[in-house]
Amino acid sequence: MNGSQTPCLLIHGFTGGPYEVEPLARYLETNGTYCRLYTLPGHDRQLHGLKTAGWQEWVRASEIEAEQLSFRYGQFDVVGFSMGGLLAAYLANRYPVRRLVLLNAAVIYVSPRRMVNEIGSRILRGDRFRDWNKATRTPLRALHQFMQLGHALRPEFAEVTVPTLVAQGELDPIIHPRSAHYIMNRLAGPKQLYMYPNSRHMICYEAEAESLFRTVGLFLGQERELRRERF
Image (cartoon, rainbow, N blue to C red):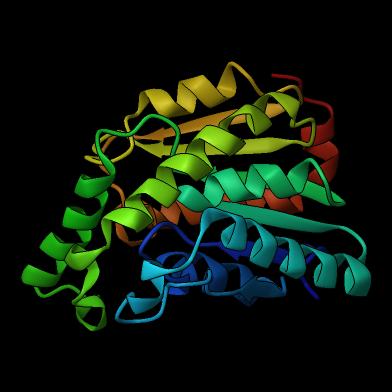
């Protein structure tokens, strides 16, 4: 590998899929980082599985991915987008995670229903998420599971001691920008905060995405410099 020698696990958000973080993964891969993306239980293209999938299954699926990476590589990095940020923090407290990246992590949100509607609005605008045309039909049970996951895993941030980068789009209509400050005030280890004033929820597809990717790439690759910094 020419970039970071540490592999990276990327976790998508509620009602989403690997496509949400795929642009960042592609960027990291061009710099020599092995990236692992996976689909959380129930998040099939039509979201039919959300009728029965529970939040504990999302946790367990993430643990399986972490176990496989730690067995094969030892340490690994984790990137969590939206709900994936909660799962990423959970993994950072239990597995040999070297660095943690949180993108629009779901802590303080306006409404989980608005999270679904945002995806629906992108479909109506003709964005690249046409295959996810059932997103606005998310079962109420799944919304409840999402809320339960947040309640169960939100305390994990206060236990995180690994170096962490927090990135938040200031125009996010789903995750309140205060979420980033909530997390920063609770992280127990070295931390960095980057606010993106022109970015909404799908931060890896926004106009500031390239800047975000460079920031994440530097964070995952310049270990010596970041070790000297305390935030």
